[in-house]
Length: 240
Length: 134
Image (cartoon, rainbow over all chains, first blue to last red; front, side, top):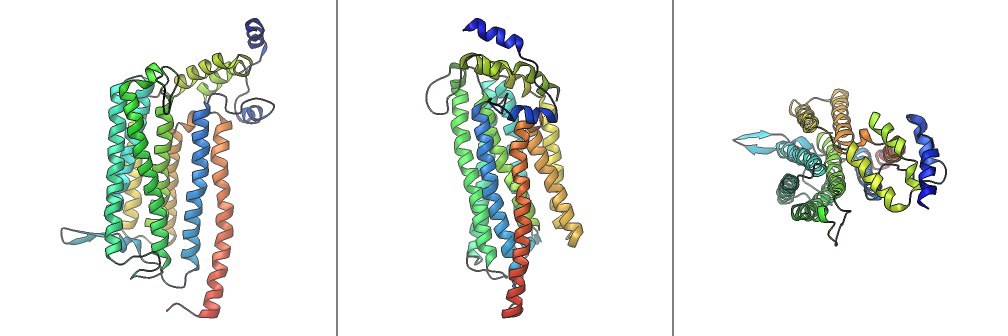
């Protein structure tokens, strides 16, 4: 068996590059994603399906906003905060954006240190990412509280089109849920990194082969996606 | 792109060798091609901060109309592109994965166009039969 395999390796030609690689990789009976593990490929496909979910939310928001006869509340004023006696537009949302981007930055560095097998640095950076994510959720809870006390409901609000409330709670609520789930899994993965589970291939939940830190990168993919969705929500819901 | 080609060279082995060895090869490749200098991440991080500040300033200075919308979209696409390409390492993946993940969301734009027509029509009927807003 081994000899056949080895001769087989010797006979095969190098795979094509560039656009031809796309057709070559997808054609015939073989795995399409050559250098991507099933875990990473499935995370990407999950994220693709999640893209459609958020895409549909933003689409329904767009449809509601275009088709209403009543003026849409001005997000710049709705989300303004009074700091030091003057109204600053969207300031809380801007800070939330910076917090989430920073968490993406620390996550990217965690993935990098993971591949260098620097366990402590990886775990600390992941916990920092989780802390920033939790800060984000906390600020979102503050924002929800503020709007609810001001009278925003899914069926109406004091400033204009009733669909504002339903779109807001649906979109930011679903995003906040994603962030919360991400924080939980960041803590789980950070604990596994800290304990050295990936070095000894310890059995259990979210295992890996000995010495493989790819789970950290897969976790990172999810976390960057949460940041990515926020980029679109920030542009379309808060700034538009 | 060079990394991707290098990975491609080793690939035929994957379906020939039995599963255990195949995964070992897979690991070696992923670890080779996803190590980038920390500086790259810091630069992208800084750019994301700059672009976010720019999009916030669009609102702060109260720009209006097409200028506002086009600036928002440009900053949004640049930020999304940086996150996907560098943070999610998509720039170093093979085209098969890139197309599989990036093309389908682009088709959502067709849905957007359909819903713009639909929403315009809904607004038209509302104005026609119920008059302008309260």
